[in-house]
Length: 171
Image (cartoon, rainbow, N blue to C red; front, side, top):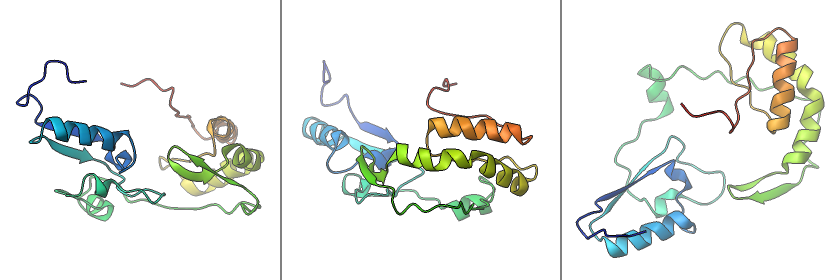
């Protein structure tokens, strides 16, 4: 890691998506090691999602916030468009779905959710079409397989639809 660096070489470490920096992960280990070797080094974190669903927090490792802009402020200043939330009620319950621990915290068991949601793809597509008019819209799916089914169902009801997942090339 250190190579030929001297104490004058490293002045800052910048973390993108710094909400992943928590007290008990490799980011914290990196901060500790860099701080020990380069006491004057500063750590800068950037994120649009500072809060996590689990109990971990980036604030223990990156305690000072120097700039913050809320979503309502960004909408008011026209950096973002207003968010229109239109939830769909589906004819089933999540009560019997188990949860699992993932690298990102606790979440529903993906395969169980996929099995529950997949048969609803055509219904979801019809409901989306009735609600969106001509507005660009993001629809979240239960899994990649469900996203593929949902995309096809949207196309089947006459919507222009594309699926985006981790395989999309970076530009």
